[in-house]
Amino acid sequence: GAGVSQSPRYKVAKRGQDVALRCDPISGHVSLFWYQQALGQGPEFLTYFQNEAQLDKSGLPSDRFFAERPEGSVSTLKIQRTQQEDSAVYLCASSLSGRTDHEKLFFGSGTQLSVL
Amino acid sequence: QKEVEQDPGPLSVPEGAIVSLNCTYSNSAFQYFMWYRQYSRKGPELLMYTYSSGNKEDGRFTAQVDKSSKYISLFIRDSQPSDSATYLCATKGTGGFKTIFGAGTRLFVKA
Image (cartoon, rainbow over all chains, first blue to last red; front, side, top):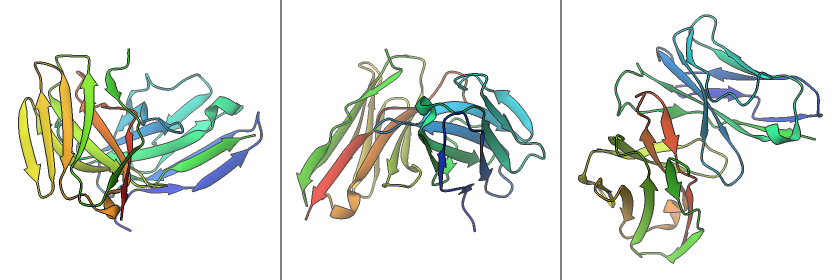
């Protein structure tokens, strides 16, 4: 497909469980972003990659959150020891270069994480 | 105070109405402003962007920025049921790469 693909679409985890969320950006897109969207809220920035380099992780809520993009394409967001407050939709977005202010972000449909 | 403030609604209008969606922002250094549309269980998609102050029109949509009052607006003319979605205003942070979103306004257009 031509768009940003995220998997799984839905994830239910028991509190304390580790989860891994996958993002396949548009082929050739240099920049990749992770956002967290709580119910009824706008997306909140988590982290940003340019190729394989993680340039900003200031939005990660705690050290239980970890993201990687080892080969500059697919990215994984990992959450360790999940807590109920981690329940949200996790959105991945990519853009061609990330170098221009008005560059369009392309979003995936997100992974809805529910922690019980 | 959040960097971008937006009334979450919901806003319900009859088909054919003119819709006005609004946001305020806090940092006068912000230059680029965007409107994203998000359908239920989908990711946001870019509708329009504007730079600095002024208007930009695209079909039934008009985006307006007033930097003096730090106010951004989206107008939808001849609204359609297919316009029912959440509309997110957004801006680029001063770092240039991070997009900052408002909370989103849920819009319902009734046939």
